[in-house]
Image 1: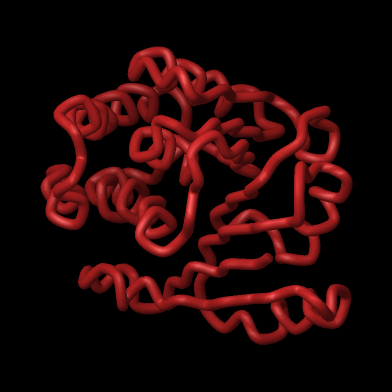
Image 2 (image 1 turned 90 degrees about the vertical axis):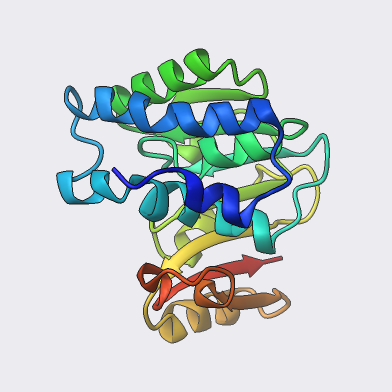
Length: 207
């Protein structure tokens, strides 16, 4: 497995506790991945680049104010929610997924890392009876679907930070047609990190 040094190179400001939590992620997910198929074997070798660093591109580009309530939609094994919760200990993260065995893994990771700012819920997004400031998601569904799922779930105005790849023109135009006042910003992750993996991947900020 590639070491977590790639994380520390881009985030030199991490505290010793945060570095230890990042280091623990590799062993935790390797152990769980033998029992629940979360990540392909090839991807597990590049775990820190493909999953942790990818998640943290949101930390480089997006604002997570202290005290914010964040929902990670379709979190799967906890991405981008878990890495973000490590980097932003003063922000509250709710990670949701409809697949129970994945949420069991996320809950264990939260417990092992003592992430007191995090919870994991086995539920569909639209049925969670909570209000949020920010929604994150990684390659879960088209933006218009995410927008509709979050209807009535906001404390203030909607704000999405999404990780997506490829040509998003049609998908984002669909959202613009449905919500003409929405602001959409695309950032190529290759401008943030130099690893070739990120060449076609983007951060999409919607608000």
